[in-house]
Amino acid sequence: MIWKLIAVCFISFIILFAGLLTPNTYSWRKNTVSQLAAQKYQNRWIMRLGFIGFGILLVINYIVDLQNSLIFWYYTLPLSIYGICISITGIFCTKPFEGIKQFSKREEKMHSIFAQLAGFSLSMAIVIHFLTAIDLDTLIAAICHLVTLIFVVGMSLMIARYEKNRGLIQRIMWAGTFVWLILLAY
Image 1 (tube, rainbow, N blue to C red):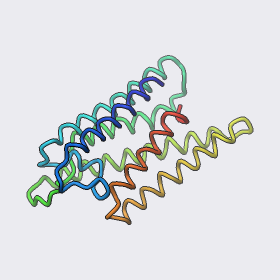
Image 2 (cartoon, rainbow, N blue to C red):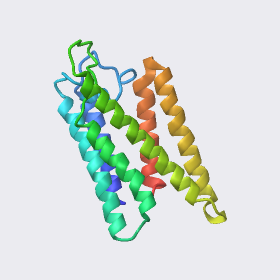
Image 3 (cartoon, rainbow, N blue to C red):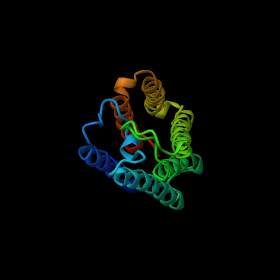
Image 4 (cartoon, rainbow, N blue to C red):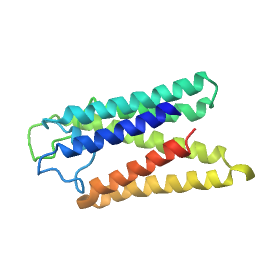
C-alpha cells in the first residue's frame, strides 16, 4: 500500500512541476499529460521520468503485496501490466504539441499503443475488483468499482470527443484513477 501512495504522490508532483515549466504554447486545458513528454520538447525528460517512476513504483507495490500474501495474483497482474505500460509510455514520446512537423511517427505510435494498453489494463483491474466484490459484505465496494469503471470509460470517450478540453478531462480522469488506486484497489 505504501508504494502505491508514494507512486501517486510522485506522479502528481511531477505532473504539477512539469506543468509549471511549459511554454505559453502548452495549455493544461487542451494539451494532455503525455504532451509534457512530447518529442522535441526541451523539458520532456521530467514527465518521462515521472511515467517511468510511477510505473516502477506501482509494480514494486504489487510485487511486495504478492510476496507478503496480502492480495491474490489476479488483482496484481492487470495493475502490474498497467504500471509496466505506463513506464513504457515514458520511453516512447508522443508527437510535439508545438506544431513541429518532423518527429518520429513510429515513436508516437508506440507511445499511443502502450498508453491504450495501460488504460485497458486499468479497466480490467477495475472489472476484476468489481466481479470479486459482489457479496453482501462488499456491496458498497462493488458499487464504487462499477462507478469508477463508468467514470474511466466515460472520461476516455470525452477525451476523444472534446479536443479543446482534452487536457483538463484527462487530468480529472487521472485524479479519479488515483483515488481508486489509493482507496479501493487491492
